Image (cartoon, rainbow, N blue to C red; front, side):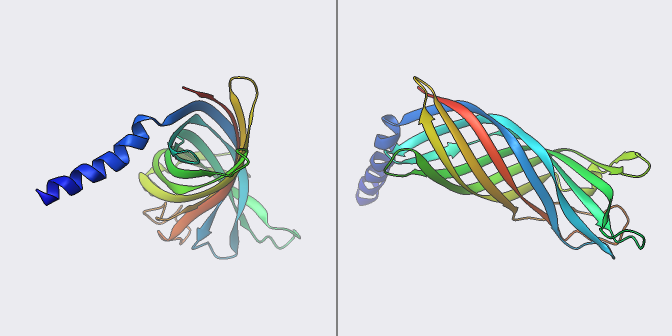
Length: 212
């Protein structure tokens, strides 16, 4: 009897806010700058490059200023592998690595008292869609999808602002992500890099949301 009462109290505690929760949905798009960190080739380094993100956004406000924030997105990332060249002052971007992911960020969003600024934190589940390497000198491009893990996990941290423009809301968000799991599973491009490789980067979003 006591266990049933406890279960009833727990279900009531969680169900009541969700039953009357405000839900916002919308679309987002933006650019990102990403790079690798971890093992690197001899005389080489990783430099960031630009990609883009497109997706949707769902906010489910469990409390007045706290929401469950979902951002399913298609993301394209790009990173250069640069090498020291004797006759050049700066490293030469020799290889570009382009990856594409389906990402499913699950965040907690906390809105400030001014109802304009907010912060988010959470994790992203990632699914590799494609991975390619391009030789910047010859222009040759190869598929390297088999060198990457199919699934991964990232940590996300973001800050944003939102403004009403009539019925919809427009928002801008700056987000930092860091891999929690290795993104590669095999010797990388046969250049003596093992599977200890992760990614990190910044993403700048903008989008529009409406209240349901």
